[in-house]
Image (cartoon, rainbow, N blue to C red; front, side, top):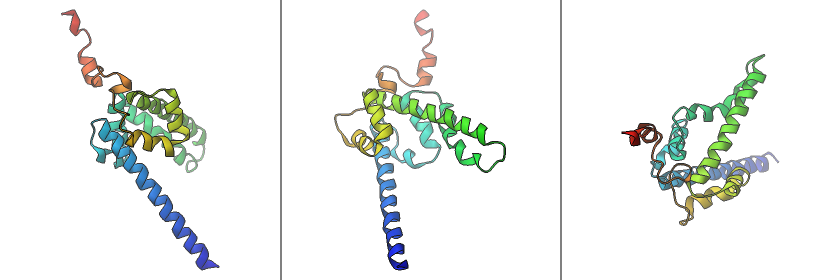
Length: 159
């Protein structure tokens, strides 16, 4: 009986590993579609920084996107649970917002955003491998350029 249980655990572990590798590959392809290095998708925290470039938000959004991990630490610190839960909620909200901006950056609407959130295992590969889905610039604006270009451009037409 223990052998069967061990075998099932190994099979399940291999399946989960395969799903994680496939997910990373999908994000890699999405980053490449957006003109960013694909390898950045597998580097923790840096992948959020690159995501902020893709969706046209400033670098400090990286910190906001990392806040969603606050809940992992809330159970370790007595008395800090509610604070970390609030921080995690803020991170979650910014994560949903970033997902919507990612959809817009590839010319998709709120329906695709909901698909990425609730059926990501279907919609992420669609975004990665569908040749008709192309990067259109930060939040879907092909003329937006980077955030730094936008800041430098403020008042440029007033000369």
